[in-house]
Image 1 (spheres, one colour):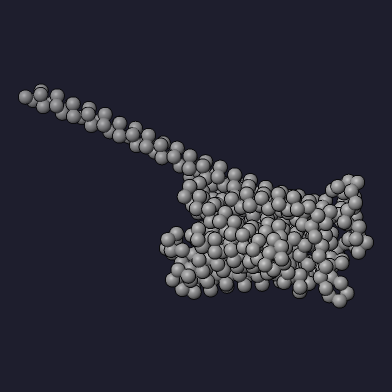
Image 2 (cartoon, one colour; image 1 turned 60 degrees about the vertical axis):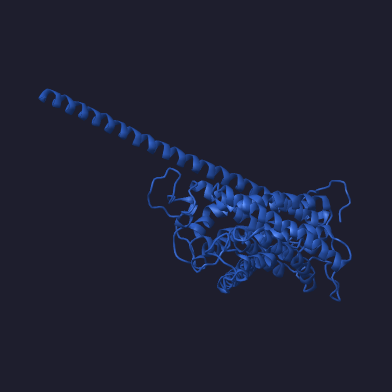
Length: 463
């Protein structure tokens, strides 16, 4: 019996040993599987963020086509060059200063770490945990370089908006200097307030993809430039009457509008910064519906106001809807998106002639699209945010009270005052140092020849 007991004990000990060894192996296997799944998620998120960034990058081609088509032929090269060069200037400015001021750890006013993209990421793709300097981007697990690239193309978009505002009379070098300052200083500081862990984001101000952070800021900076430059020669007669200066190439305008519409599917859904299938699809739908409603509303409004359905106004109507939905795209229902787009399409048709009337000479309607509709879209979030999407974010029209709307209004005012005043100061500094406007002779001849020594349409008579 004793021998039998020893035998049973030995078998049990052996079995326990085997099970213990196996369980350790299974645990290691489970850890390996979990790590592989995490790596796959990071890879999927990174691919989505980069593809979305590429779409936003390509929007610069849309801006170049739209702006050049809406201006006169003799200034085509100048406009194309500004849109091309501003991407390069913005990239350097954001790498040197902008990204650190916007997302680096610091105070509630600005970041003070991470210049030249230095310093560790807080949530690297490896999954290791260590102290970094970009805490405000902890919520997304993609690599630091992916975060930087995606935010860079947004910053460059803000600078590109200014290009249309000041078209046909600004010095190329002066525009590039201001663009550098905008992306290096103005854009990132207010961006830090909202997206970088600053005071506006802390108080509950919301701007999912940038109606204020990107579009209104570009509009405010462009408006300041228009005021410093003054209107184009011949825009207003001696008795104050406005004279039309129609664009030269509507096919380019239409192509630019389609490219921008496509790019917005990177702009808004890409701001998830994660391969979240449900959120990406829903945001793409609200984005598209707002743009479509903007086209319909602007077509009807332009026909009512001007007697004809105006194609250029309808292209801007689509952009108005897109700008307006950029802030609330993740927080509204499809019906809310349509209402916002319809309103934006009407607003842009009213804003364009109003600005002309008060002698704000904006050749492409950028202030009306990006500033006016950016403000409207930011405020619309406080009205139309639906509890069915996010129970914690409820707009006034859904019974959430006026609290969110007041926060949105506070952010609009704060960013507007800061951006406009500082932009006005920087424009004046550039003007004092190197001048901002070409001579009357050069403006009359066209900036293509006077600034760049070439023509977009060689051998054609330009006007």
